[in-house]
Structure formats: C-alpha cells, structure tokens
Image (cartoon, rainbow, N blue to C red):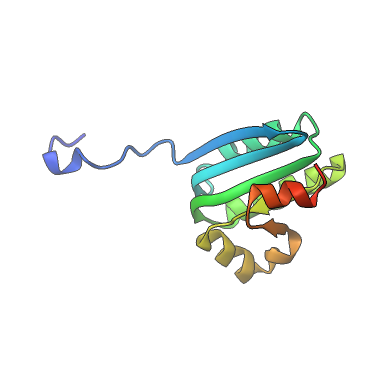
Length: 128
C-alpha cells in the first residue's frame, strides 16, 4: 500500500455490490447498488437466489443504484428470470439505472423483463 496521503481519501475497493432484501407482504424486493459485473456476479447471484428460495408471490429487483452493469449482470438476471419462471414466481425489474437500461436496450433484453418505475407500482400490478 502506498503511504501517499493523496490516496487516503479514495473509496475502499470492496464491497463493489451491496445488496438488501426486503419482504413486503408476499413480495420480496432485492435492492442492488454498486457494480454488477463478472467480479460481483457471484454475490448478486447468491442474494437473488436466496430471495427466490422461499418462493415469494413476486420477486422485484431494484436496480436504481446500479452504476456499472455488464453482460455478466445481464446474464445473471436472465438466468434468474428463468429460475423464477420455473418456480412460478413473476420477476420484475424496478427503476433500472441509466446504465442498466442502456444495456437492456442495446442487447434487446428489455423485452425479456417487465419493468416498473417503483416497487409500489410493481406490487400493486401483481395484486399483492
């Protein structure tokens, strides 16, 4: 580590992806913030699969605070969508950040997901 004082105010490199899981009635909301890429995909995958484990009425993934979103993050969401579908659980995305939205649109994956502006709207639309 450098002892150069100009580096002392740099943010710590980890964790790059923060997760928070909230239960609202029968729905589970996973809030992801930070960077979702190859290096953090395992953290995201574990959190999201744990959220799917109790087989909620709805799984909503809040992506508003995701800054870096790569193909690895997209592949994680697509795989999770397939797992949720197999369990009969609707999976929706909530308030994707500009970066997430750009990746979804550029890859055509935007059509693979139902997207809501707010968690409240997602829950209301799914009748829970």
